[in-house]
Length: 452
Ligand code: 5AD
Ligand code: SF4
Image 1 (cartoon, rainbow, N blue to C red):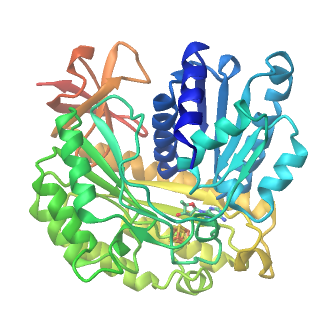
Image 2: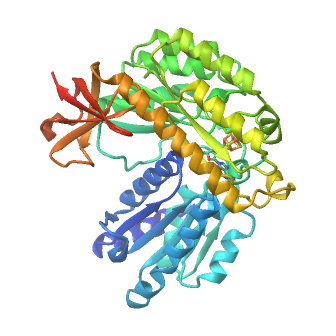
């Protein structure tokens, strides 16, 4: 811990020199939320928010290592700051997040990029003040990737403006899917106490937020070490706070079930949207992935959820090119997608991650086969998404307006209860309002509507 005297010296220095920060975030929503926490710490230290990284006094790269292409991009972007740092030598450059938590990665990065001042892992964010003090006051590079899976409560946070907020309900993952690096870089599961999460949501309501996204690698195992706390109960308690909308991700098919679906159906403020990553439609491949469910079990879940909530929107993660994936196994994934009729999906090409069991499995799939398979998945999903969007035309949906439309700045945009983006005419003063909109047209991934 930094002593009070050094902390005050540091704050004085940051304030008097008017220093600013910039955080570049890669990867998932969890990482984006970690960046909000780091932003909160930096604001508290007296830093201002910079508009771009080239003019900032401290730049943090919050990295992701789930797939190799993200890693390559990050190395490239950190490298680009070398020249900038030559001109602005006082600039602090930090690299943090999942990538740094891989074995020897931080030490390697330090050797490769001598102009990088600090590297730290996913659980060391709260030590940012002492790391910065070490650089600014003692002129020492900082390397801090020790494991300490303590979920910090009541951290300051730099959130986006209302109406949307993310709330972390747990850290880590115990599942060890054979392709995935997450359990190695984020450590074991650790759930936050329910009362703290509920308190945070109540605080967000007070602050004008209307929708929360509950985050965890596997929300269905929330509270696994507790007799009283579990995910359906948590959902119910949050629904009772009266917040307008609740979403959550991700669910794991081996743990999701009727108890959660029934709570979702009972409370109108729990959005009728389910992200249920399947990865593959082939039972034999799911076994090699260590997913712990079969195609049949997954399809039973889908039937059950639709029985309870017929209009629910369902999305998934699909992965192709896992080692040894046969043509038949691949076709099983295509047929499952057709059978479920996903409203949307995130489609990934398998990327070998060092240290995971799948990386050393025989029969890695050649790149051209992976490319040809992913193209088929993407093409099928765009058909399914368009069909799903067409089913919305003519209906009236409640939209929570989030801001200007990204496709047409003269329009405003927000999501339906099911999570589909709708663009409509309207004034920007409607941001944060929930308004009825009649859907008039389906685009490939979004909808067009008219206010009524
Ligand atoms: N290669 C490709 N995709 C991966 N994912 C996780 N690990 C890998 C990997 N090694 C995907 C899974 C997961 C999503 C968040 O990222 O589909 O659900
Ligand atoms: Fe990775 Fe599987 Fe855990 Fe998801 S559930 S984070 S895919 S190990």
